[in-house]
Amino acid sequence: MQRLLSTLLLLCCTCLVQAQAVPPAQHWDVFLLRDATSAETTTLSFINLLSGEANEVEAQGSQFTLTTLGVIYLDSADKAVKLAQNDGTVRKHPFIELAASDHSIDWVVSADGARIAWTIARQLADESLTTTTWLAESDGDNLRELLVDRPRTGIRLLPVAFRPRNEQLIMEVRTAEVVETGPYLLRSGLFVLDFATGDVNSRQLPGEQDCYCAFGIGADVMLRLVPSAAGGFVAKVFPLESNQTMVVEALPVAEFPYAGNLIVSGDDSLAVYALSQVADAAGADSRFRSVLARIDLLAARQEIISRTLPTVVRPIAFSEDNSALLFTTVNAGGTWKLRLADQAISKVADGVYLGRMIDS
Image (cartoon, rainbow, N blue to C red; front, side):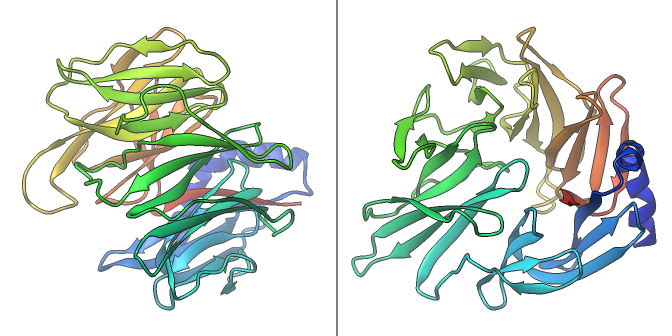
């Protein structure tokens, strides 16, 4: 814990200066540290850099997601949705319930952690699935049932992302027959649920609906990474409020056949994703080598911005006015920072950074 607290200072010193000017808010930085011998055994660390208070929660599960109330996750021991809080307590989630007969549950949280959407797929007697989509504030207020999907064989709906600053939720139609190839989660069949009014409306997103590829969402743009015949990945940029499309040509990196973990900056000026190749057969976590690539959405060009790393990497967030990138690694864990100006990489924490809770 002492090492985690000290390295956090590197990550959050700027925020401390800002917090001193506005003292009422208490900031809790939240990290996830996985046990080296058990993938589902984790420690959640809640650290208050203003007071020095630090609390830890032991948890077994998956889908760890930060909200304004704490970390929501699916407990693998009793298959229940739990909420871990910054006082070190764990309780059953107050309004999201998973019945023993339910097939699966998935959720997504808005960028500010204040709103959550979740889907519960239930298997019927004929083995078809029906999916119900729910929406609520993180404290349970304004609970709404958005959509009940008709029974379909081998198909369920997943929430993918809230569209920033809009009353819209991006959804995916996921088929059970899709086989994952490579280390990244790819998506297809995306559509939008608009819940701004009492009536919920749906529409398709622009672009190829059969594109099984990496996906990223910004404030007003959507990106897809499409494999190029010559190698590398073309970035197709779709402004969500117009019919225009911008294409950013692929990098000549045929040696990296996999791409994913795409994130877009909040001002829609740039995006970052990971490129990977198979290095050896030494194990599921160590057989990939990766680099990070940046897409300049204003200049419409791509470039490699990191050295080759001996694992799969996942960009988490931009920091320091988009001059740095936080990312995590699969086999080494921890949170790392890449300075975009000189490509210097430094480790800032042993745990995976989940984000910041603010107590008003």
